[in-house]
Every structure is written in structure tokens, then in C-alpha cells.
Image (cartoon, rainbow, N blue to C red):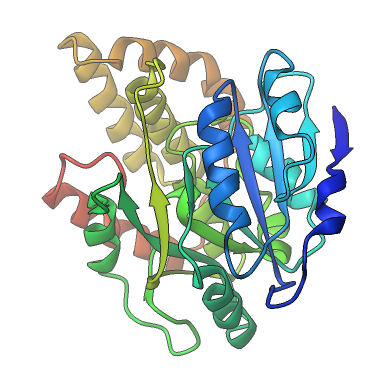
Length: 313
């Protein structure tokens, strides 16, 4: 992996900026979308330094972002790191808090400063999940409603609504908490990887909260990449095998098997990849402490009432 410093960073004015938050962006062969994101981040009043993890196959992205005024570091792993690129970025960050963006998402002005204030004021808070607005029309992401309706009880030392899930590109983490929980799990790689991290943060004593006063913008486009449904299905089963009681894990596996038999989109591939990763999951299995498992069961019941969603808090 190579690391590059963007020379334009030292010429950025610091007046009015906020030194508490770095933004981590992972990208792969989406140069135009990435540049739009970087331009939006450079225009923020917080002026956050940006660490870009480039999983691209060629040098197009490297050439395009060199010298961009937002970019503090460009990390170029030797292989595609998927969601684990965020782990690399957090390790390289030198600020107490790190916000995540994808190459098609960015933050609303003032949200990063507000997130840092909340993290400063709540020492047990490990992760903040923001409200996500989608596209030019700023439509509410369906996950916003699910997170806002979390059945987990309020906690006096946490802001917002306690949850056990989030959208990665609309979240801000306490660097210490993220690293102590192990970051995103290598077995999942990409696709629905957030729930396991939320479990591990909560199991380590950190709070995870949804705070709708924070806002991220997401502009997904047709990038010609299929396979996400199978990744989400695979990682749901692997997450239960890694952290949940056996009845929960076996039920999830049985549901995926039935979906594969019925020909549901992505299910056969998901089942094949789940079985290939199952020995590694069993070797790393560590069940949740009782209070976190109780919260997870509350959320299972909530998810059962809205099965059309593929994510839950």
C-alpha cells in the first residue's frame, strides 16, 4: 500500500475550520463521482482533511485527485479492500473523530461540527448515525424512519435515539471506539457490514445513536455493479453466526436456504459464499453480552414488521 500527501492541503485556509473531524472516503473506479464528493467536502465550513482510500485498478483516480484542496492523504492498497478501506483511513487519521463518506456521498454544512460537539459532550458515545437525504430531490432514505423508530430505550448519557445499525456513508465515529471495537470485520468485506460493527461497539460499552440533526447527502448512480443483494444476504447470515445465539443463526441460514431454493435474486450466490466463509465465522464466533442481545431481539421484532427493508437499526 502506498501513501501520498496532497500538497494542496497546506495551502488551505484554516480560519473557521474545525480540527476535530477527518473525513474518510473509499472509492473504486468512479473518478467523476469522487471529484464531485471532494468538491462538496472542500466547500464545507469545517474544512475537514480528507483521506481517500483508492481501490481502483489503474492510475486515473490518483492523477485526478492529486493536489485537490480537500485531500490530505491518498492511500492506495495493493488489492481491493472494500469496506476495510475505512479501517485503513481511521488508522491514518490524526483527529479524535472520523466521518465516513463514499465516493457518491458528502456532508451538509455544519453537520460535522455538530457531530464533534455531541461526541465532545458525551464521552461514551462511539458512533453517530446521521439522517440521509438521497438524490437531487433530497428524498428521505427509508432507513431514516427505521432508525428514528428504534425500540431501544433512551439512555441519559447518549444523544438522539440508541440504535444498533447505521448507514456507513452517513456516520461519524470516535476514533478510539472504532479502533477498540476492531472496525469493520474482514470476513464481511462489503455489503451490510454496519450491523456487526454496531454490535461490537455496544458490546464494548460504547453508545451508538441516531441523530437526525446531522445530515449526509447521498447521490447513488447506476455504476453497473451488481451483486449487492447477494452480499447483504450473505453478510446477514454471517453476522448472526458471528454474534447471535444459535437459534437466531440457524433461522437466518434456513431462510437463506429457502430463498435460494425459490430462486430469489442473489440468494444462490449468497448461500454459496456463506458456506465458503462459514468455517472462518465459526472460528471467530463471540456471542453478544446479554444486554446487547436483548436490544438485538427488540430490533429483530421491529425488522419482522417491515421485512421489505434490507437494513435495520
